[in-house]
Image 1 (cartoon, rainbow, N blue to C red):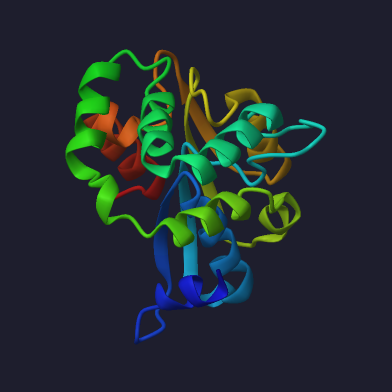
Image 2: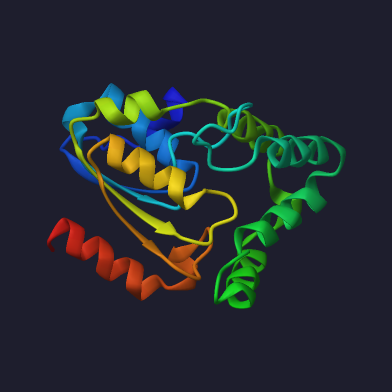
Length: 193
């Protein structure tokens, strides 16, 4: 993960705003923790610093659902990816359109399955303490009906880390696909651009 975070650094090392969707939030936290001078702010979209936890305390997704997903991924990765795409649109008022977008962008046969497995395991790391220690400004855009990131738990971490946040009803895990104009306007407002 550190190599991935490092790869996002620009060559001139000037401070940047970071936009992070879902698991990308974990990478953004790591980047800002390792290179605080390079990150002005982080906008988290449908993300949480704690995706899973065996005790489900403040976690994004139920641990048993996560374990089933992980187990199914080993048995049938292609079918699991399709199921995960469907899970991402649960609760979204534009579910059909968003799922269609996911399916058009994702060629399951071209995915590196070992990298995806590592990504699943990364979700087991709790980054909430690192989030709270970040000096940069932070903003969360959350779907109130997200089936992957429990909105109330994500709001808790936003509050604990003195971050701003907004949550929208009838939006699932992909607000950037469900309501892109609204997301862009929210980001512009947060960044005051």
